[in-house]
Length: 286
Image (cartoon, rainbow, N blue to C red):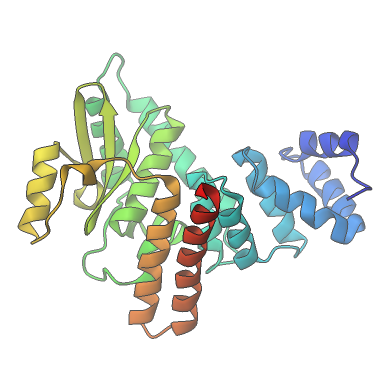
């Protein structure tokens, strides 16, 4: 990395998100000339805190064939720098290396822009949820895939965006990423056997059931819904779930889904990701 001194690194970072075709071609040529020296720099940025630069770095890695999606996701896990959108896209790339990150982000941006157009201020957070529900579930047509629940594509963000159907956890990711673009504070909530998007704004705590077209439920309704499914939830189950646990749980679902479909190599891969998350967490707390 000696060739990339501090000044040169800063210059590259300032250009990395430039969408000009001329700049991109120049950077591609420059990184190609650096060869093995460029890959660690780009991977460092791809796993860094700036998710915009991270996505652009991932694009260069992919274009230059420096990218190994499985290693990239393992590196993300070990970094302990867990950002939901970056993690979900890196996870999806382990199955679809040619995933078009820009297309996924553009879809999320478009949904957020449409929501912003429909917001009538002042409005409550519940009112804004109803607008988000209209855009995601009615205008865009997202829905829970109850008919083929065990299809692994239900748990991969790019596939969910392309097919407009998915699992509770993946639909929650779409909802959270759109809401985040709107500056709204929601949390992922993983209860036994289901997944919600939660709002903990003051005294008005409620949960969005994304698998049921965004129905808004209060805490007692969520607990009763789970009891009706022969589950035994506790009030503590309604607490927000850290990003690490969201992504680990998604990997666990994928391991189960691929195993059920007889794709044992992918099942083992996602099971190993779960183990990586657990090992990284233990290293961090001890």
